[in-house]
Image 1 (tube, rainbow, N blue to C red):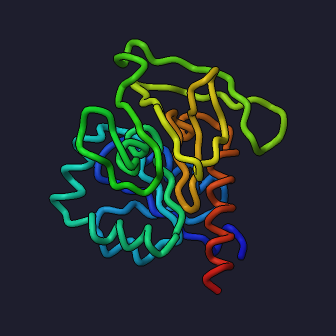
Image 2 (spheres, rainbow, N blue to C red; image 1 turned 60 degrees about the horizontal axis):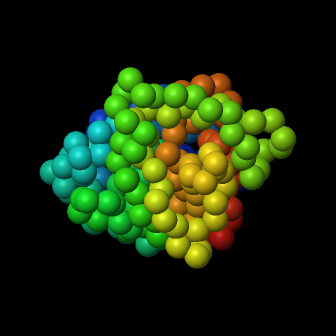
Length: 199
């Protein structure tokens, strides 16, 4: 299946969803802003964007998304959580209620400090060639622990910043805020393989 035949949902309750929509469309795939739970039936993969994780969690509960998200994950359709999205899909969140439990990581919110402490770092990815990727960190979380089945795709020093377990991809930074599409392309490849398995 070509990318034109792939539909990617971006949870559009709060946060940087428009930037992800733009990135997916730039990659040549169809992007849909997800504002209602029933829309999840229309897409092959889902991005949960950065923003305010507490607010997004409350809106997920308010609008009845939890059951539909759990079904989406059980169907093994790919989900990509960035920044706050990572917090939401984590199995454990330090000093908070657990996340959705889709990936075996323990995470901590705002681990690098406040908005003023935001930074950029060029990092090596375990895919996509030798050129480093400019990772943009804004009130970024940290992955404190990762289970044995979690693949580490990028690190800064000893800090895991990009990881995957089965159909779940997470990043502590914002890949949608710059023009390098390698991570979004990687997610689209995950979706393509998922569609082939279904067929």
